[in-house]
Amino acid sequence: MTLDRSKLKILLIDDQSSSALMLKSLFIKLGFSLVDIASSAEDAIYLARHNKYELLCVDYHLNHKISGVDLVSLLKKKHYLSPACSLLFISGDNSSETILTAMTLNPDGFLVKPLSLNILEQKLSVLLKDKQQRQPIFDALIQHNNELAIQRCKEQMLKYGFSNKLNILLLDLLVGQQLWSSVEIILEHLKHSQQHQLIIYKAKLALHHNEIDQAETLLTQLIEQVPLYGEAYDLLIEIYYQQEQWSSALIWAQKVLKLTPAVSARALVVADLAIKTQDFPLYWQTGKTLVHYLPVWGHEWLAIVKRYSDLFEAYFFTTPNRHQALQHKIVMKALFLLASNRLPEGQTPLLRALGNILLVRLEIEIQTKLKGKRRLLVGLRAYLNQMDKLPDEIILDMLPLLLLFGENYLYQAIIEKLSLLDKEKTTELKSAMDAFAYLEQQLQSARELQLSQPQQALLVYHKLLEQYPVATEVHLGHLECLYQLGYFNNHYAVTSSIKAISAMPLPTVLHTRREYVLNQFNLIAPEFEYESDPLQDHESYVAIPQLEQN
Image 1 (cartoon, rainbow, N blue to C red):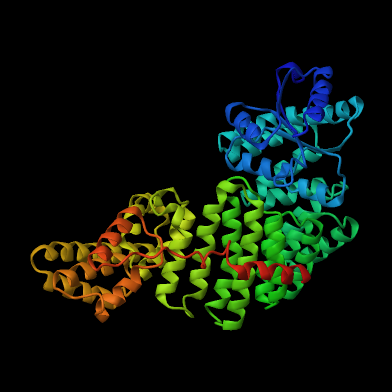
Image 2: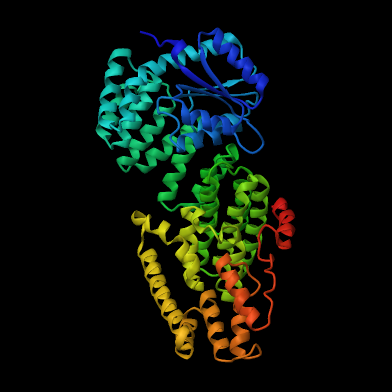
């Protein structure tokens, strides 16, 4: 029984309407009638979310900011595509970089434009045959029943015989379940097969038996035979990485990244190995590659940029080097500026927030807390009245800084969101939450004392300032008490607190309170400065030519 073409739902994704309509006409001639067209990423996301497609046919080059690979990755991450959904890439570009990058998603085919009816029919006939054979297996996988999927895979092999698609699907399932004896049996059955992918599983089996040299030999020979086989590079790099042979791993990592510069995971591996070998120019240059191909939809870019900077920070905080820190600061500013040119405008506030958080963490040992606090608030200015709109990753990253600076008001704005992260609560997170609970308790106590016992309240604020010398609410309360007690604006305690709350953006509630307090001292709050903004700092601009020359 063959699949009924007229009932298969197909989505064509191509930003060139003429090309999409031409392709749709070919599908209709071949008996497919349920064919939708998405001419943009937004359309594709909407259609995939509200329909259950059985085949995606995607143009690799959608526009200068998003590729077909980025878009399909996003759809898979959002679970808008079924495991049974087949995938075809099409492109007028048949360069090795394009094809190899597309292959990282294990598509069912890659077709080069212009397409003829005969070529499309040949590819679809094979694709539908494979789809029919694998459908019972995918049904089991949709139910998250791997044991049933393995059983059905074996049944389909008995029914249809060994085929490349079934072979790989079964081996993937067996390796995933750590059923190595079964892997060995299948590989023995297929020992005369010329399928290159099988060598990957032979290498994995050798690693399971701790035959590392054998695995290395298999993979290097495979790369010699098929120099563009990215998966072989990845596994070989993993072997060297586990053995802490950083230089060897880096050689292969650079080779595969050169083949597929758009694959962020591979760029991050090179960056990691560059840090481990202390090749900082390579690390910084790899950052430029990452940003150039940064995925622009969703928040995947956020995780990539964070991971990249975290690699340097992990090294820096164990081996502090001020010169390297300053170099990294310059490069990161340049990278953030490049990223701002690539990301949609709506993502810029989030990029600014992340950039300032990373720079504050990097500079915290070499600058005053007040300067760090100003930079943080400048970075967060778009979210100061809607902190709960920040992604969880940003909230968790900035929490230690909020505690360091004693910014209790901002913490209270995210406490509800933090309470939902129970599964992710680390010892450090729980400790920070406890510290803020105590700070809030002390602030509440001081506020109550202010009404009738300002001198006692002042003592509470003094004690809090010893632990949180730049905390906004503490300084505001401190100033309010000083005014009640008759201190004037030329008093050291007054000028010190005024300095701690000036030249920075604040949430509306604190901004209003600051204006009122300063007005009592016959002062005007100065406008906050943008000099700490990595997207506007002149230093960012001068760093770009330096990156270009590397």
